[in-house]
Image (cartoon, rainbow, N blue to C red):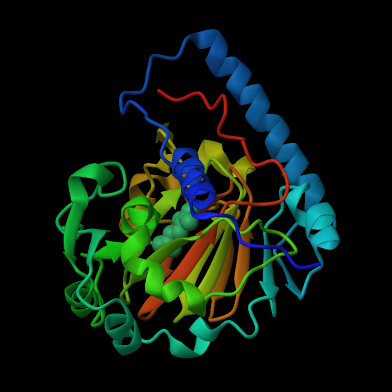
Length: 307
Ligand SMILES: O=C(O)CCC(=O)C(=O)O
C-alpha cells in the first residue's frame, strides 16, 4: 500500500511536535530530597537490579540484538512495545543519500543557504545543557568547512532542526522512508566531524537513529542502571562519558555499569527506547537522522517530572 507524504503544513506540525518532545523546558536546580523518598528510591533501585539479573538469564530478554530487515510487526512486538534497543540492518537499502552524502556533495547541494548549528562547544563542558547559548549561524558551505576535518566544536544537531527545514530541503529527495515503523514525519539531521560527542543522557521519546555517512560509536545503558549515573539535571548524567577514566574516577559507581556498545555504520538503524541512557561519538565525518514519528504512541514525555 503506498502512502502519500503529508502536506507541508502537516509536516510543520509534525516537526513542532518532535521538537517539543525533545526540548521540554527544565530548571537546572535539583530540589531537596526528603528521607522517606530516599528509602523509596533505594527500594525501587533494588527491584530494578533484581529484574536486570533475571533478564540476564536469557538472550531473548537481555543484550543488544542485531536484526535484518525487521518487519513492522516484529519490531513492535519484540522491541518497541518491549522497550528494548535493536540494531537493524537492510531497511535503508536504496536510499540515494547513502552513496551521495560526502562533505563535497552536501556543500554543493545546499550551497550558501544560512543554517543554524551548535558552536563554541570545545570551550564548554555544558554545551548540551546550555544549548541555546551555543546556537550559531553560518552559510552551510562554511559550516561543512568547519566540521569536515573533525573536532567537537561545531555540530549540526536535532536542536537546530526547526530552524533548518527550508535551507536543507534540497537534501530531502536523497532520503527514503521506513514505512514499516514510521510515519512520513521528517527526521532531524545531525552533521558533524570525527570527534563530535554527545554526552550521556536519555531521551523523553522512543527514537530511531538512521546512520547515513560515516560511523558513530554509541554506548547504551539500560534504565535499571540510573542509580549509578548521577542523574541530577533534567535528562543528563553528571558522569558525561563512561569511557573517560577521569570521569570514572570522579564517579566510581559508574565503573561497573551494565552497558552495550554499537558501532553504527552507513545504512544502519538503531532503535533507542525512551529512558535508555546513551552517549554518542562520531568516529569520522558523519551524517545521521533521528526519527520519532512512529506508528505507535510516543508521548512518554507527558508527565515527565521536570525540575
Ligand atoms: O548522534 C548524536 O550525537 C546524538 C544522538 C542522540 O543522542 C539522540 O538522538 O538522542
